[in-house]
Length: 170
Image (cartoon, rainbow, N blue to C red; front, side, top):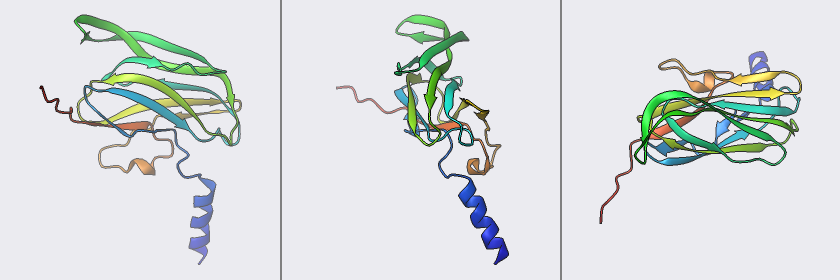
């Protein structure tokens, strides 16, 4: 009986779905994808003041959506060159930050950017750093092969990349 009450306490102290997650969990390779990062809580009751997402290889031409009350910056860096409508792109957005806002700990909000997915099918991990007035949380843990991502205390947001959609030519 004692073990049960301990388990219940553990379940109550960690809010389920508290992780930073992507609203749309999958996207086809070669498609444009609207990424909506869902932030459901602060850091132990402290309001969120910043969100930064690192874009993995295979995420191209990312453009953040402006957000009222927040400063949005896209940091660019060198990437493996790729083709964009006949132009070779070798510098692209590597991370996006939203700063200067204040999201109360018990409120929920979304941070949005659009991107093109060129990665091969499989899981793609977006590492997110959540900065709060007090403390911060790195949502950057990536499961080892065969490990349950739900077992990780601070998992990275994951996107399941699916095979390219077949386009039928008329």
